[in-house]
Image (cartoon, rainbow, N blue to C red):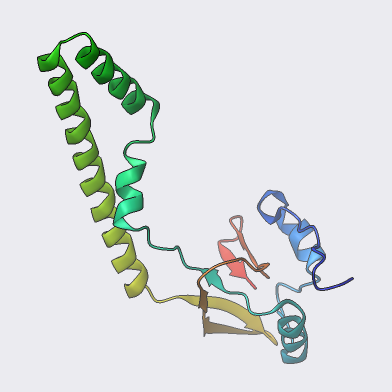
Length: 161
């Protein structure tokens, strides 16, 4: 297989705990040996978290006008002006601008809050190596994805990697 060929990845979130454990050839009690962890790191690369990309102010503003209701209001504005109903046309135009302004500032503040939270959060991964429970810093990458080597087991309230 060449580097450009992609391998179909299982949909891990729909598999049972046992199926994931068996597929990854992992021992929940003992974890991975350092040698096996190093081999998997070399084979699959680091298990990193994708960081969401910040949206620009322009893209947030543009998104306010990409809905069916706004398109209908724009059409109503055009029709109102075409029929000579300038007061109604301006009233609808004011509604469109107010809607866009409120939506823009709401989304922009939410983006700013999310960005601040992402910068403050401490990312660690709980792993088991040679029967020892270890906390390791999780790495962040800006794009793409990598296969995870763990899954949360809600039956036991543990996470293994």
